[in-house]
Length: 254
Image 1: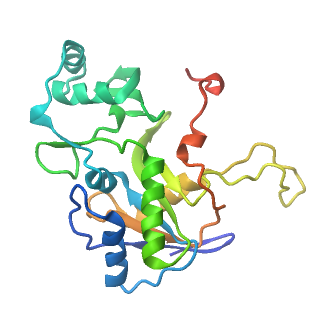
Image 2: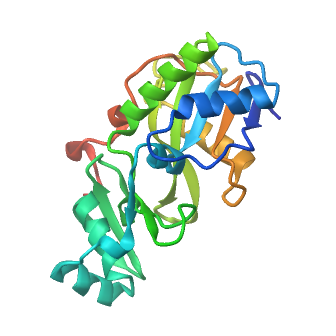
Image 3: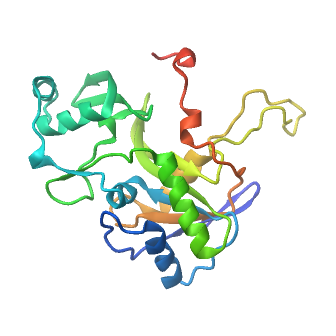
């Protein structure tokens, strides 16, 4: 539990969630965990759900042994010291390669995300399996939000989070790759600070901030796939994370 200028923010991890299988109702599974822990949901609670559990429910897992790498994947795998089958999946999920080096392949995915390895990940999925990102994380978030609201009778928001690296900094942090019921940005432009200065471009990325806060409670190695963030300031809406991807004409780093 942490204090903020606007009041108290609480992060409640949902532990004890069983392994999710393809086709299972993720909303029901999460609500069962809520009930098990005696949590009383309130309006404006935000469910932050890790990408990996969403991918599992949606069947976005690939058996690595069934992947046949092409010549481009083999060449890139050799230069970067990676498994050619893994590189083949990375290339399939990418619309372009941004940069390679030091054993890392930075790509732009079909979603518009610029990230390492197209979000393809072998952790926390089982031996021989690889997880891909959801096909449409915003749509996944909307579907899950509706399931949670229907089952709880509360007005909720959902953020789907994943771990991304950042340019110019070592290390990773969780960010939002999909959201529903919450605008990904807080529109502060036009408001004045306490000294009377009018803010012009300030738009805190609240969906990313919520994702990072939830990760502090769930961790990477605990097997906890979700958390509830309560008390955060946000505006309800359904634009989704896709709405905040930098347009190419405004991207200074292309």
